Length: 414
Image (cartoon, rainbow, N blue to C red; front, side, top):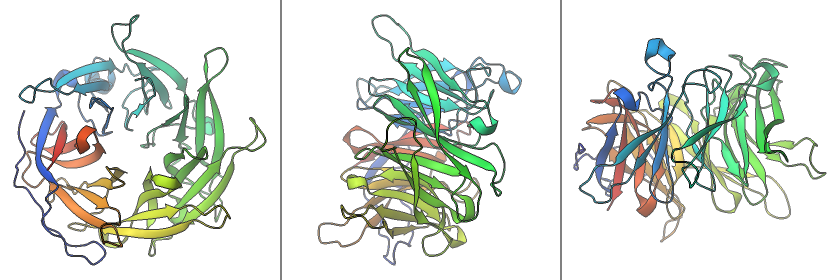
């Protein structure tokens, strides 16, 4: 296991006019695993972590499938923490895609289910496949791959341009599909929100809850989805005409009725940026996300739901995130109400960083930003995601540097 420099600390300045001090949150960064060969290549979708600290992820290339001239159609894998700190993490390939009905090239993070199962979807081979992995039990010695639904394209939607993970809630899966077109013109089908659930016979059935059309003043081309667990609603971001955030509410009159769609925030490239994405649900139904602003920087915004008397959602920018003119590419929940995210940088001049946003409190009346790690001294670089694990440790994927096939990193808090 290679060891990243313990002294790598990037200086930068830019968050709501505050000077950035030397970060002290992370004591060190470890390279847990380097991809290549039988383990697969290009793990760009990122990792997720369960309560035991086991990581799950996917690669877009590799395995035994016939894709890419025999280079493989992608894999699903796990990384299990060692029994002792001196031992390496245990890597295991859980499934190797074959490029047929089972799909190929997954490029969205996986989703954990309530009973240890893992859900996800693929983007190639067909118009996209939704799947689950069932963990070993008394009847199974290995992980079992099940196909839940195969998209047909056209008005049924497809997954070829979707990078947001599925939402799993009470045994039901929710997700977004693209329309298959490269643009979102007037009256063109340009994406949908779907639900997949089991019927009485145990078969998984897909239903489209909302279809986006490219009409003026309407939201189209969905990019991200999260659930409001208090109300059963879904929050969806889109990127057409600058972008919108919508709230999809379940029907009050029972099953079969259309879901109600309401725009709660519009983005026009002004003070709130454009192209909202990477939504994160916070306490009390508050929603956070990232948007793009001018000159390559980015914003982290907050959407606070209205009170019991109704009204509008309150939108605010909680941080301007920019380093070397690069903005945030990822956002996720941290500990104690904080948010964590990554800046990818580029493959040539800047290697990227991980940041944390701490909510107001302790005498502070605004969110504060910490650049908690820079990958300036490698050996790997360019983080594509970060998630919070047990003990507040952070895990994610690096996609460049000495290991051009990709690697998994861990950040240790002080």
